[in-house]
Amino acid sequence: MNLSDRQIKILKAIIEEYIESAQAVGSETLEKKYQLSVSPATIRNEMVQLTNLGYLKKPHKSAGRVPTPMALKYYVSRLLEQEVMPVSEEVSVKEKMWNVRHQRQELISEAVHTLAERSKSLAVASADDGQLFYAGSANILDYPEFFDIDLTRAVLAHLDRSAFWQDLYQRSVGNDPFYLILGEEFPEEIFFPCSYLYARFNSNGHSGAIGIVGPYRLQYRRLIPMVTYFGELLSELGR
Image 1 (cartoon, rainbow, N blue to C red):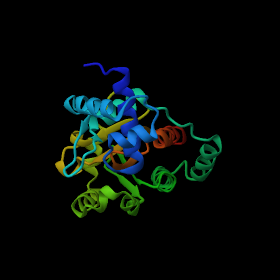
Image 2: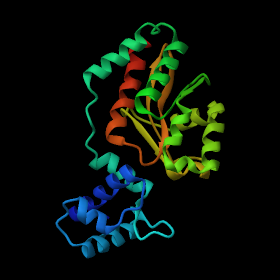
Image 3: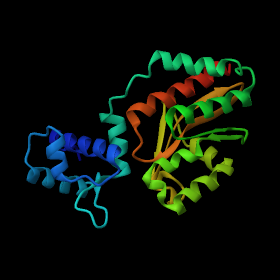
Image 4: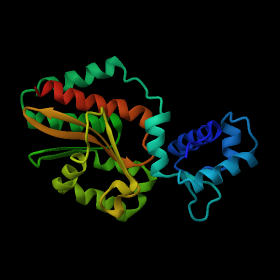
């Protein structure tokens, strides 16, 4: 079913508010912060419709709504206005990786550490030969979703399982600049609150993926162009 222009506007506002706050979003918040030009009652009615369509869900003990993975996919593919990564930042990253461009392992390792530092996220890279690189594991604790000790334990435990990450990136088809795995697209239920945003690369005859792991409310506007650039740079420097 196609969404109406009003539903799209409300859904976009809910998603962006949720990305910023990590809290369920209510109609009063939307009416006050966003220029939707409709009453709170109308917003509530549209939120009910969006819930019935699978774009929103109602957390326990909350009057508000949060977007579902389906909504985030819709947002990323159709509504998102990506930021432009500053040229100065691109140059800085490239200079940092330039001296190790002929050593494949060192190049990927440097890329992962730099991506973790710049994104303030957990960065992971895996290659088709089974090698796994990661950095920034403490960064996930900045997200309230990872106050769940079982979720955090599962993510950290999987950093020693290269086959898990290799299986994820090998699902991607085509030549898209980036890929996004959300919610129930993960093979294990414990990962359903998570996202894996990654870009593929080819380096010295090997294929792989580099990306970041976090909750599914990542700051996509900023992080998609960043992850895309790291994938492109690894392919460029790894020739």
